[in-house]
Amino acid sequence: MVPVTLYAEFFGLKERPFTLLPDPAFLYWSDQHRRAYSILEFGIMSCAPVTLITGEIGSGKTTLLRQLLSEMDREITVGLISNAQGGRGELLQWVLSALGITTEPGLDYVGMFHKLQDFLVKEYAAGRRVVVIIDEAQNLSIEGLEEIRMLTNINANKDELIQLVLVGQPELRDMVRRPEMRQLAQRIAATFHLMPMDAATVAAYVKHRLVTAGGTGNEFTADAMTLVHDLTGGIPRLVNQLCDFSMLYAWSGEQHEVSREVVQGVLADGVFFGAQTPVEEVAR
Image (tube, rainbow, N blue to C red):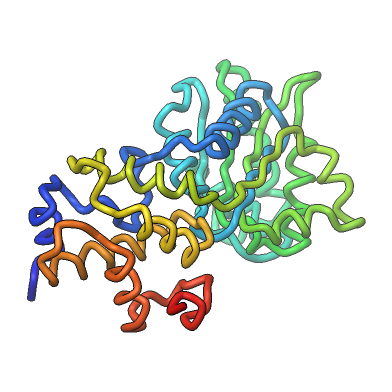
């Protein structure tokens, strides 16, 4: 089996620049990602009850969260929930687990709520704030979102004892905008929606990742970059997938430059499933 790092060596790179794992080292600060990150920081620093960040699958939300966690103040107690699901009571269990709060088997909802409340009061008395980040929050039920609103009711005078950061796909915004969710919507003090990258930003994004991996940034031709944008719709994860395959194809053909024809070859072979543009249009 051919090592996956071999094409990186062929292009003079230290590592593959387009892996799918979220890596803050490769984070490209587009204007949108800077604004989204600023909103995250603002939400934390201003003690916003709820901060909401949404975007399409693969738009870079999780990478921003990783960056936020790496820079979080040590005086803040953080609980991360990666994929919570379920309705009333289940979210509370997720929160307790994320914060490392142990509970007795069979403890009822009221008991769990008091456990959390006692923990938050102790943290507040010690001068620590508590932030719970819920990634993929679109998987929560309406009852789960209502429970989030209930958690924001725990406060001490003018200070919030718990802050919640909700991160998810666009449908999360639609859920929060429902009439029955208006009380939760009123508690969202900071929000941002990540849009797909335009063609110029995709080109800059690809160049940034190539340079970060030790390349020149010119391994893709301008025509290839235009096609990458058209095929991916500017979604970072899809850009990574297509560019990774394209560099592999260029390496297998002993081409030190990724051309439009190389990218078309990837598409023609059907190994890239995320194409946002029909094959027949690309072939024109």
